[in-house]
Figure 1 (spheres, helix red, strand yellow):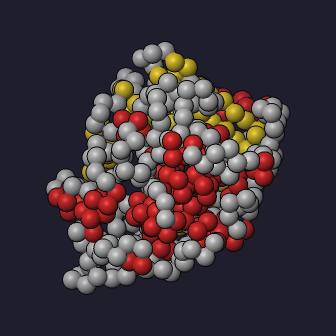
Figure 2 (tube, helix red, strand yellow):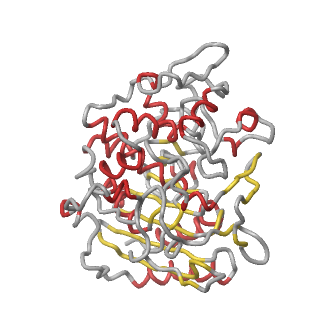
Length: 411
């Protein structure tokens, strides 16, 4: 990209070759595979309707079938106020799309023997000792990866809850504190559940980011780049950007059309509220949130997902890649009926209970700035939707309409 640059930490990695990944997402030289007329018609209709009904401001959609890009389209505006069109290489605030990237970095360290899934977190973070019922239970790396650590998110609790009282950062808000300070605050709050007993979406991946820093003996930005983004040629993906020229402006759902986010911007969600700070993406002093802090393009996300689907090379072992797409929480209740959780995303374990056309074993998640992705290994199908409109692009009508349009077009 012309105007976007990763941090100087990532630039310091130099210009190592990415040829090993060059064929992971075909076709090469920017020539998309010929899409089926039905796929293009169905997905175009979904996107055009979302724009016409003012549910989104802009979006990028990529669909890959068996490693070939079968559909790609950028629609709407990246910045409505400046009249800047959305482009295929527009950069977005990833929010939780960061999680599979940082998760993959941790598993790369597991493959190297640097980390072990059953290591206690205190091996790497001796001061991180949140309590439960008066005791200090052991939290493992595996429990961080699966969100069974007993930790939570501030946005998921009511105002005045323990995370609010401790002033914990969710990693995408206006609090400008260090990662060490956020871990101190997080550790001061009692765990919601005993580690290993229940699934609860949480700041676990932010804690994991600190573990990666200690284990790799380098900042998370450098470790993630060396282990994942640089070898995969994810040139637009980093923890901050130098300028906003190619960064999508952020919007949130409102009538009669989405509104531009302020900074901070409060959006009601569940029993609590999401507090966004769009300027974090431009603030290199904001701590690198492993769960919500990265930025990048739809093409980069597709590269990562296809790498995992095809077996992990050149960044992960086949067993680690398969583990990411395998339910890791057993019979514990997951995010919704019929859905468990792997490493980095949810896993459909019962399509009928999940009320989804996706195959058993589909790996999926999203991001609170307005994103959704899924990988259906059985059908060799990968879909990426990045929008600049929260929360329509994560849990709105667009997400199910797009999913259903893709499956209605499957041969």
